Image (cartoon, one colour):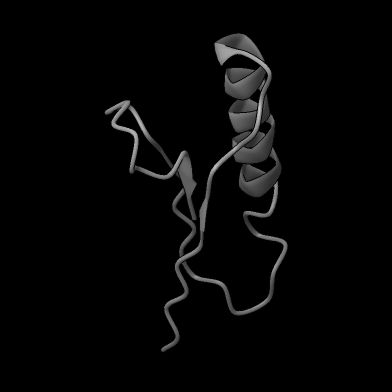
Length: 59
């Protein structure tokens, strides 16, 4: 079994633009469910802590 974890920080001019980018990224990854042969599990996490060192999105 291979586990792969990827983390992103999303850019934005303000909090609203950043939130929109996070939502687009999450939606795009959710669209991959059932489309990649052999992939058994897909989990997308979005940061809610708002601490400066946390990543915005984790796949």
